Amino acid sequence: LLTQPQRDRIDVVLVSPRNPLNIGAAARAMANFGFRRLAVVAPFEAHWREAKSAVGAPQLLTNAQETATLAEAVSDCTLVIGTGTLARRKPEQRVVPLPELAPIVRDQLARGGRLALLFGSEKRGLTSEDLAHCHLLVEIPTDSRQPSMNLGQAVAVCLYEIASRISEPGAGAKDISRSSQTLCPDNPRAQLASPRGDPPATSGDLELLAGVVEATMLAANYSPAAMRKANRRDLHLLLRRMALTRRDCRRALGLFRRILWRLQHRCGPAED
Amino acid sequence: LLTQPQRDRIDVVLVSPRNPLNIGAAARAMANFGFRRLAVVAPFEAHWREAKSAVGAPQLLTNAQETATLAEAVSDCTLVIGTGTLARRKPEQRVVPLPELAPIVRDQLARGGRLALLFGSEKRGLTSEDLAHCHLLVEIPTDSRQPSMNLGQAVAVCLYEIASRISEPGAGAKDISRSSQTLCPDNPRAQLASPRGDPPATSGDLELLAGVVEATMLAANYSPAAMRKANRRDLHLLLRRMALTRRDCRRALGLFRRILWRLQHRCGPAED
Image (cartoon, rainbow over all chains, first blue to last red; front, side, top):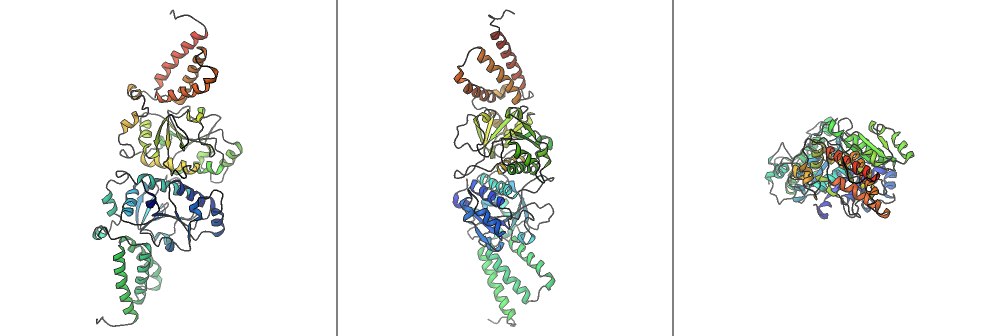
């Protein structure tokens, strides 16, 4: 089974939750399955206070991290997993059915990573801006006539699956090593190329890199203003697909900073 | 995956539920996973009405069967499965961890049976009287520091497990045929002895038999009044452990009816 330190490397992130009962139910499900790290992004303030002060609220709710943006909430996570019904969307990330998630979680924990499991608001689910922070999406196999789950119940089902399947090598996907490598199916060498010992990049690393690349695009006059938002999203998704290590990330950051500096100072070709 | 006719042979039974929100959440989880047969035993009347009239209540809630006793609710079921936290109890039935339940459900469906999944009230869970109707108990593997799950979340987790694991031969238990036979570990021949084609006895069959056996015990002056309740419970449990077919049950019923008639009419040894 999962050890407590392993469970403490799996964060539950509620994005803009509204109903205090749902927040409480999500926290209770976490306590039921031994998870303790809850983050809440831009909650509706009155409801959030109400949820925290409810009778019998578990300690983890009082200890929850509250952030203004999703980027802050997941900045130290190396694998961000979005949840929800994707019926009306065409996601660009890989979508994994929940019963096949365990090997991916296990692999990420083995590589020293930290995971976040994202749940959107009751009304809208995760927005496309939220989804741009996700490395992959997980789908609970629900009935097409009533696909949308209650928030507290969705959290319970996901955590049950992770807590109870993680220790079964044969369950879900057939081959763990293959499964972990198809994390980026359009770039199968991405993970093979990086030595196992090198830890994966965090969301914070990727955000930093994305910021410098964006500034570079601007300085190079790469994209017209109308395309900037779409390009930013594509850049976010691309960086997550690449499965960079921290070291890859630092190198790319150094390179782009140098390029940016040159562009901004209107220098000619490098002389040094 | 489970077909709809198979899902319709799995009943969810809520025993004395109190909170209308929980009833609604249980019904919603059923709709999410494509289950439609809900029975409610001795609900708190006002709360039950409130749950049924809630905005957006799924059709299955309006169609739910309402019974005064658990015996009625499960009378046509051939495998009754109790859920709950067993931390403080020593159950006499076999306890199966939820991740290993799928092969048992699959086997029962293959044998033409009908299953009931029982959930107790929010406050007390299933009583020992309720448990006497169960062939086996299932336990959701929760954290010992917070073992007790919210009703709606427990229903969601159980139905997710059944709906998503049923089609995976390798998942959970290793060997389906062995698993189905260890349903009554202290009587491994019980299921082997009955030809596969003969359908399992329903709870209603067993109740009828138990009633006649009890009357026989009374007529034979078998048990002192103080022991009657305990004997009744043991009898209920024994009958469920035996994994009788409908035919076994009819035969035993015939025999005990004959014995009872003789006892009541104070006849000597049979002459015919």
